[in-house]
Length: 387
Image (cartoon, rainbow, N blue to C red; front, top):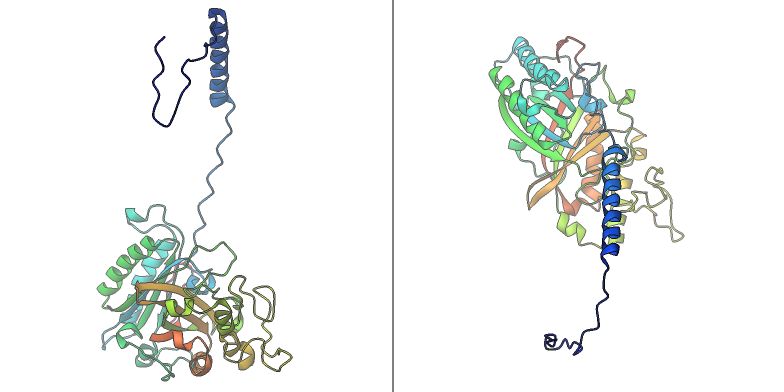
């Protein structure tokens, strides 16, 4: 027998050991066993395989019609788009009703899954709201709440007028960004045909968040803890409410560079759990008066949680809803929406924050709007029919 070839560095013995002989009867027996095993596997594959789990049912549609608009009552959906429209100076109430009827038609059909657009086949649920700006309400002498008014100049504001205000503010929210884009096309087609012009638009998003948990903002902290129930009567004016919108640019890189304890002291909450510094769980009530033995506050006097506490405003609260935005690497932040009876509450809170909040060096308010969120449309009706 010729010597086995060996590779350098991998020596092999000069002679190979004798190989065991396989008898023909052994080979036939093994083949039969393999065939039987293959047959059993086939039977298992076709007869005994587990049944695939049924697909979860699609999420239920959110009704458009109701006493109050779904964009306030329903839970936050992850993708949103805000549109601000301006109306011609000669717009009267009849023209406004025509415009609101056109918007209502699009929103109602979208909510019911009946908007004529193949791109929306199987589209997820939609929520929406429509709100009237103070200037238009004054111009047409609409029966808006007496508290509806523009915000005064606030410390530190860097507002771009082209990104704020507007005669009519619309918002659509869904589970997927592509849906908001398609709905925007239909809304603009309907409203511009009724005489409106687009003033500004802004998209926003939420990170993936399990149901029932609070989403996080671009600083990495939970945002929206301790919100009142959307149905709280203190938020409403006969099924309408007031919206304050702020576009807030965030210096995320500079804030992330701070040590964890510095970020938590600035916020007044733990990063990982969202618990206040005086508690152990996210929804523990922050004790803004608790002190260390040396007399300093456990939740610092300059923390965001302390300065925005309802205790400093007689317990009055606003429904806070925020979506993140990411327009460019240097323009990222929060779209802050507050629903409340009186925007004066927002003015008081924001003034305190602007003057003393430890987060202020990392924030810049770049756009603002106030609007009257109309009562909802009754079944078969449209938004604003009471006007």
